[in-house]
Image (cartoon, rainbow, N blue to C red; front, side, top):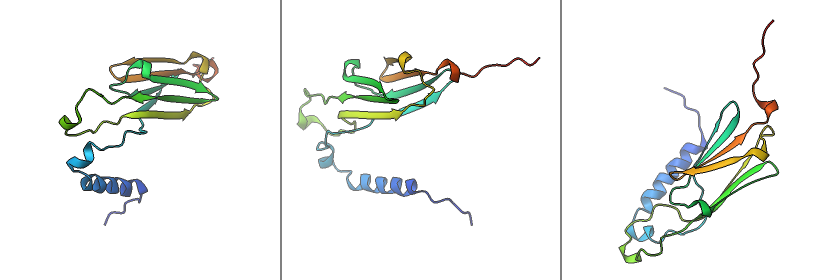
Length: 142
């Protein structure tokens, strides 16, 4: 017999699958509430910066807002529903629409004055450079 560590996430995922199966009917798809949602985000670290990549397909740059304030990076915006589609022709709506907001506490070694952001192919990349004092230094041995 193999012992497995209990985690609440496994139970939540199971409940989510069961709920999805229960609600998997045509009459629920079009009636999906357009409200808050959160884009998927990857955070990576290099020697000289933190990289935050957010999946924002179908959203224009003008609808995305970035702010760094008091050591917190906030990404917010809105994905608008395509109004020209007639409701009777819609069979399934799985993409989330409406406003979104994600906030991340930044480590003290990030230089907030030098943050850069680019958006390409539906992916927003925020580069948060580290302060010079936080970068690794090579020390010569004499």
